Image 1 (cartoon, rainbow, N blue to C red):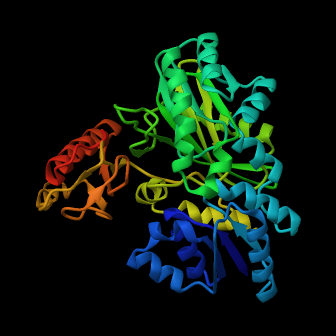
Image 2 (cartoon, one colour):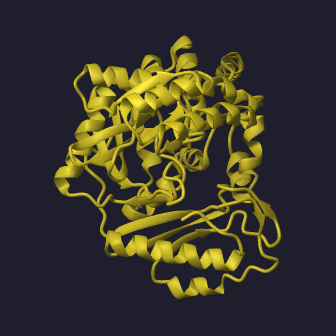
Length: 419
């Protein structure tokens, strides 16, 4: 069987590895402007095992993706397509629909990527939804904040990874946040800018932990995988610091999160794939933050693997290839928490970095990737310099140790970090 990946993420690299491990023919269409993020020896080794690799300017350009997919199909018929990069999943859905290749419903993906449209749909269905307004100017954002009631969250109507999103404590801050959003678009890769120019969403600021439900669907049957917690930076709660699994919720709350995520997916029309549904677990129940049209990303697939012993990408391959799906929740014990190491400001790392103290946490530490932790290099605010995963018997212990280790890293590299 032949599977094609349209762009990739760190988790997507593992999916390709697992696909090759199964003996599948694997092709990749990748973006030239994103290549530098994946120039590690391990990634290059995995990519070198693929059967066909086509590099185009950007996977957000529909005509380029269409031509590439047709070129690959001429080499070998395509059985499935996977896209784990949120910014191009709508393009992947439309192209697959044109070529009659099984993929997630294009209309569902379009509705989910438009945060305002997604909220309109679930609101009309009677599902819990934050109060929101669609605006296009900073002055309108100010008026929206006054109408909704502060604090509010100001975010792109179509974006991803919380880029250019901000919490605004006052209506003046909402106006400023909207202006910063509009000004910040020009600094994004040119291939992403059109998505971020589709408008601004101003919505009420919800109280409660940020969690996500990982759910799958095929042939109208839903599968529940995990409810995870997402620790947020004290300095800016729009910045996620990593993930903890499972979330620190009661069994009733977890059931409610899965039911809510499934209801949102049904109303938006999701029919195939594994999806990452972010929500705030309020006292009244879960409320949508974002419906992501792809499997969980960042550190999360590895956290899931450390906790359950299985890769969620294996289930993703099963769903897209039409293989039998194990209808049993993953088994696990304990908790795993991961943190990204991110500078709080632009700076240069220390001339000497001593991480020998990590041995003190050998009982908890199960993964550490130094990635960019190199002496004296220039780094940017919010750039991910590395990450680590810790295991403990309780949610509280896992996160307490994770936060302690983050403070130790800060002292070692000589740069203030986000906490």
